[in-house]
Amino acid sequence: MSSLPQPKTRFTVDEYLTLERASKVRHIYLDGELYAMAGENFAHGGIAMNLSGIVYHQLKGSPCQARSKDTKVRSGRTPLSGHGMEGFFSYPDLVVICGEPEFHDAYRDVVLNPTAILEVLSPSTEAFDRGEKFTRFQTWNPTLTDYVLVSQDRPRIEHFQRQADGSWLPHCYVGLDRSLTIGSIHCTLMLADVHERITFATE
Image 1: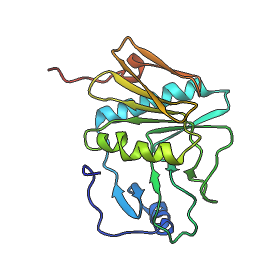
Image 2: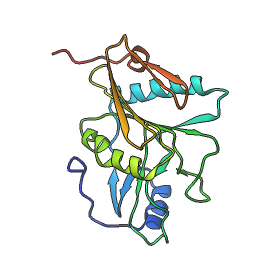
Image 3: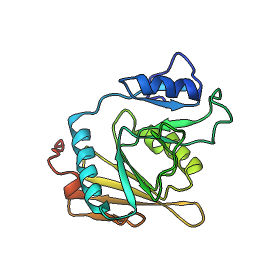
Image 4: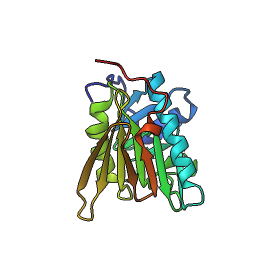
């Protein structure tokens, strides 16, 4: 969390959702604290768009559906009241839900049952994506079976799969000639397609 700016005020879950639904800036909520999300760079935006297109076309006609980075996911116990400050609300770059979506409340803008989450890594948030965020996903989203981290500075994808015993098995794919399959949603990602039009810095 050290890579994220420190908040000045703590908010309840209800206060956060009320503010967030009226805000033009997206915020991550973590145990009462709000963290403004920085704008994405050109490579991040390109990879996120590529992922959305690839996954969307492969999900057509299936019981699964994808939502982009404007959909919130709750990773925490159901608040006993909106006055509580425990919980984590985030905006994955891409979230896939299989079956009927389950929502936090009647606004239907906070998903509870993700099947797969795909994130494009950024230097400022990579430690958080690998650490506290993944821990929250593992702990509080039992429907989540696949967590995918995509690098933007080289052709590399890490795929974490939940096992029957609750552990997570990591796989790493490097190179534009590699591909991986997310079995739970029947989608195959070719790194050349995911990183299409992305220019990598030369050493």
